[in-house]
View (cartoon, helix red, strand yellow):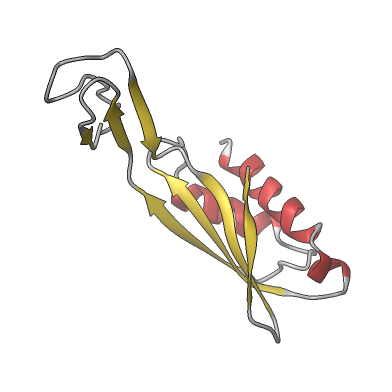
Length: 127
């Protein structure tokens, strides 16, 4: 279950922030997870709860914002939801060359809410 190592990376990054170093306690962590990132949200939440113990994130809630996958055809510009597993052949022109996944692989912290303060938006740290 690689979600445990992802959860540990989230905790490590948030604990390294200035607020945590100043003794702050995180109440919520918001994360974007793309549908093609290969992450099971429930497993990530479970792992997050475990690795948060004895850290400034103990008891923090993990909020996951799903990001739908989007592919775009270079030759004709058509955009489509590629599905899972992703179908990277353009539904309009049939081209597979030049197809780009423009969304759906995200895995990044977007905000942390610290006790007694407003939410602090991160610089969208990729994990």
